[in-house]
Length: 252
Image 1 (tube, rainbow, N blue to C red):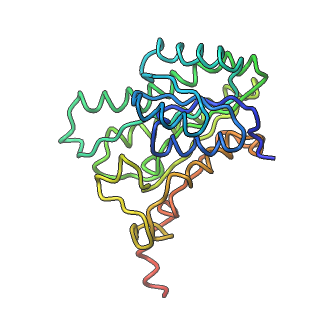
Image 2: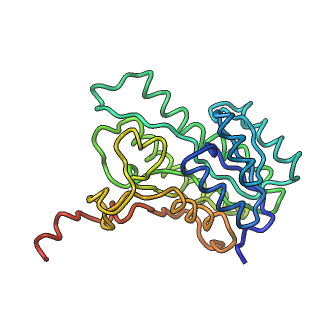
């Protein structure tokens, strides 16, 4: 048993990359998935390929979230899971960053997560409980220079997840965060991410991660198999945040 059969799960930013992988994994496990994204063509294609529903969605507005919740309830009558995956990145030092860039990243990466959590509490309470998985980052488990707005937003998502886990536990709503490392996605490929052995020597496993590996972690946390897990931080980073790989040279 997958623990996902017939569960209704919303996945934001599900058109491609990590969101698409998570949506596909849960749909394959029997969940009824609602894929949301601003990338309408890719979103519809992904949804069609995995047998999901697609809703165009701006995660930064309350109206957008209400539309997604309403569409999901009309289609499936309930909401059991939410994967807050939609996000953007920004590279540059604090000195180089602009206020406009900082506020844009925070609005999508953090405000979008807050609005999503808030929007599904009522339907999940009605359903008798649920599971929320927030996509944070390895950048929220260690300091990464040059990722100011992105890193700050993901640290905040990490904290919001833990607060949500405590506040929503009485409603039987579990809240956990997943922290991907250097992954091979449309967002990171232009930055030089390449799959295969030796592609990322900073990680203990020595390679860049693949979206399905994050999808597996997300699907587990949404499912009933993780029924006693809330407030947790699951790093899917090949051991990148576990320690300094370079130190091993002194012991080998």
